[in-house]
Image (tube, one colour):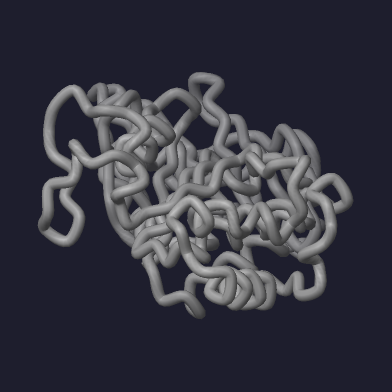
Length: 293
């Protein structure tokens, strides 16, 4: 499966990944792999490989030599290494690139080579530490599809670190949301989005409005769950239109309600065409969440 560790910078995602990979020793607890405790095993004895954000390719080696590096250390035969290099380059769609130098490749191609170097060692788990963080948006989206394809073809588990919530939602089977060294929630993307267990998860995954009530609790509602009606409607929250921003196929409308609180909403273009700045409107909520303020 594709497991994603996500959360704000400094929450412990990379630290946890390094503990799994054997690059850091945990202060306490166990690391279990197929039921076996491996926390004392060095990285080279674990059936995992790591792909880093910085690629860590050797510039003085060819692409083929980079991919073969770990296999040569393990003493594999020349024929075995040659076959593995061909297999890995084909898997990452870079056949014929073996004789090139890393400096001649684009960022996306270098990242593919870093992945190829990891998978030739046949790990049971591939650890990826924000591997797409240095790529531009379009290339990052293309590489996301490539990673899903690779995971499916290899049939192994990917454990992937990212602070990008959209990337987490797009790639994962399960998401682990971390906050200040603790796990706030583990679940599928749908579970995390539709049933956020804590206020932090609700605020970190997707957009969320929070309205503080007089009893000290807070009501949360996602922008897409807010319906706008022109004028004041009894029993609904009323406010004034403050901003209207066209964001492609939908429009973001911000409404200022009591106590200067602002509610963000997403509406269709035809609905937004009927709204103007400072219009008085009423809001109804299709779904809400409640958390301690």
